[in-house]
Length: 353
Image 1 (cartoon, one colour):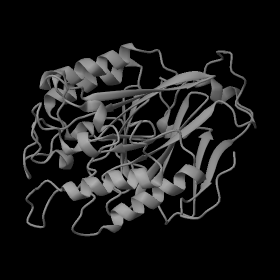
Image 2 (cartoon, helix red, strand yellow):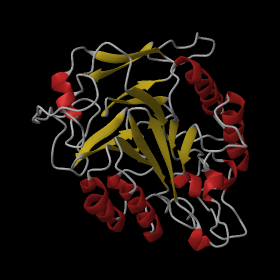
Image 3 (cartoon, one colour):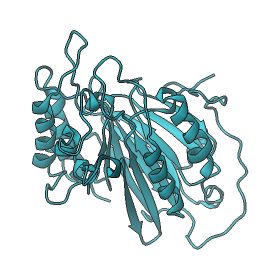
Image 4 (cartoon, one colour):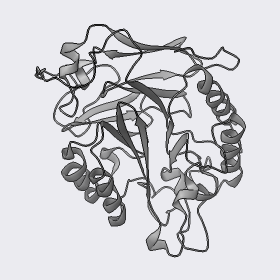
């Protein structure tokens, strides 16, 4: 059977507890004990579908969320995996909602999550298919994501369209290791109008950038975040991921969204997890994820609904063990370890670690 909120996607293995050997290997890190050491955490939200014409509380809730999590959860970064703007009418046609993009940018700035002078430092975002509806792709006209996204300025056209980067990478350097984050634009360029702009697509130049990231390690842990799950990509792109990315042994997880399943769909692709997140638009889902002694864990919660968010990092959930990780540290650990935070809410006291 499948666990609630889980799905194997296109992969043949069901998401059941995995039998994996725990070796007797040793390393330089002390065993996982009762000290808050060798651990950091981050957040993900997806499918915001902000609009300037209806349900503007999506934007006000986003600002409140970003304001509160900086004090109450203190994540290393916040990942935003696309469909930032809705850009469609009730008649299922699309349009460029510049005012909604301005609202998104203003929410990032007012919350303190974005310093316009230093973009893409705390909120790491990528566009989704809704963000590309009707978007041109020429040197003289930057997309709305380029103008108003946190990481948009890093993806400017420059001298030519062919030179436009479609990924952005970030390294989190700690005394105990280096961790890589790669944001990938899986949208079409130029952006078709609705309803024909839905599938994920990775251009050859993007594949080259992803391969550069994979070759830039080794990383103690790494994630790729994007909008489209593998099941929503065209065959050419799906083949690239399943033959190059997931077998590489370099990526702990693909973090994505797109399908709005509550709370999400979870699957294994070789030594890589694929973890789709439910939407912010209707359900206000967010994800808390962590690397604890290089073991990757996550949990999904709902903003202003779940009274507390608890992520148990040791022992790790057996459904999500992968060969990518130093599993011997589980066997050598001495304590149960967990991150516990109050649900983000305006006015709550700062977190204490």
